[in-house]
Length: 186
Image 1 (tube, one colour):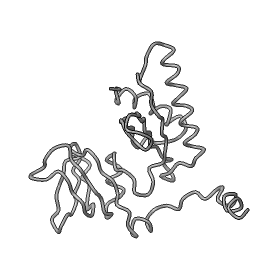
Image 2: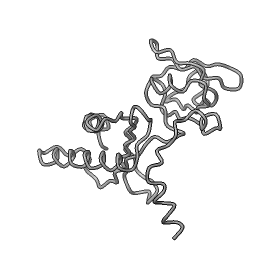
Image 3: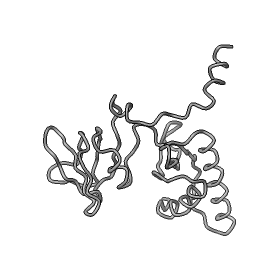
Image 4: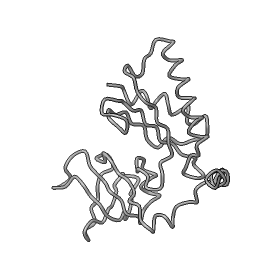
């Protein structure tokens, strides 16, 4: 299996060089095309917009591919098996992966899955009510009860698409939309 920490260590400077923040790097088997295929998923965003447009995704994909090729020429093979590289923006119902993500989205409905039981639970769904950065504790209200969950136990977290989230999200970049509409009319 690929060393995700090393892969992230290689990808992060490439994202930073383009002015992007890395949101998440995942390597997994299975996906849209088939169960045997491996996927390296890179999610990044522009700090000012929280999104990437298609040209940004392409630029990051090229940089990462070129850097992986350079390392391979130097004798370091980051991923042994064939894989698909997927570069994307986090989207409106984005994953929450960093402490700053939890702090930024307080008040929004969230789904959190833990790596181990916390009390008698591993899954929570409700409003994100707080984030205490010093102790890295996430507060989430689920069924009227507020749980203070350690950030270190979070295995997976994401925002739930709601009208409130849509209203709070920044407008998407609509550059190129006119060309798409013209093509559809033809």
